[in-house]
Length: 454
Image (tube, rainbow, N blue to C red):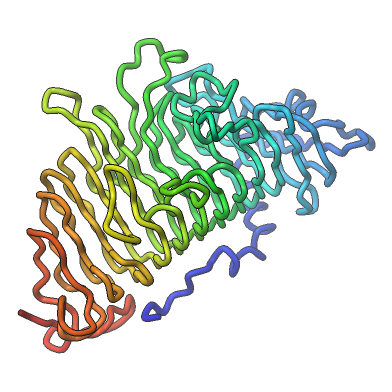
């Protein structure tokens, strides 16, 4: 491949986890007098026998160290603390028959962040009816090095519902909230977790407050059959918590970086993308997010999928603007379906019935797709530069907006439509000049040697 950087940092840096966890511990405790509590299954040596008992006994800023073993509980955290594996051996939270494995609950102060400075590191979390880890109305939460699998057990996929899911989760009938779910969260870090075999992978939404400035990085998100690997979705507001709320609070300025998102959303046609960014109806906001240096492969929708499905001139505006998709490796994903249909397997698809502006698609390497980049909107513009396309349709404009697709590599030096090159489909696509050799992220390209023309 033309990119010289390593695309699998999750595996390369995983050995550094104990040191990273120690660093987070130093930063997470706000007071100098913080205590350390311990948990083991037998409750010996002055330790608690359950994690929940230790959480109840802890003061703000304390650290709870949990020994290996299996803990059958739903742990609720509503104070600043660090919950970490003892000796870096993963304790198992088996939440069979319970709502969640861990719930960081700041709901009492909605819509403001009700809890902050929480670290959860080194756990295996399984079998919850809904999310393995749910974080609601919180700030500065770190989820580091956990394995979250086989949750969403309450999902009845044939009925499209999750019986008993809380009313504040307003749009989770068909997935129960995924393995990890952030609701109304800011400045959280979800780092180096393994998230697989849930309904969906990692979800950020906005039912109870805005979600912004979060980092989703170096996670391995795989084999979640009914939804996306990583999702940003603007949802209806939770009036059960905030009766005065009329519009979603919005999702903005988050970063999805250096993740592997593979084989998600595969169970049903069009079930889920590698990364999904959704502002589905009037009043929703999903803007200013960055998807950078991820490996997105073999998912049930396009590698990066962006959707809006409803808009009217007198309705509240839709904001799906200014998202950036840069430096990703994308291959082997499926076509988009229903109203957002693409004419074949697709790397990146932006579909909207509202105008969309400011989307940047740059420095991506896209292989094994029939359509590399697709755009359909009634107005607006997508900016597509410095990408390496495969041999199918490099850029397909399916709507009335425009695409600036200059400075791309079309699989051969002679430009779009030449023998062996990728092609352009649809109106309003500017593609001159093009690159005459593959784009290299660290290369030194001379303008005269790398530009093509009609």
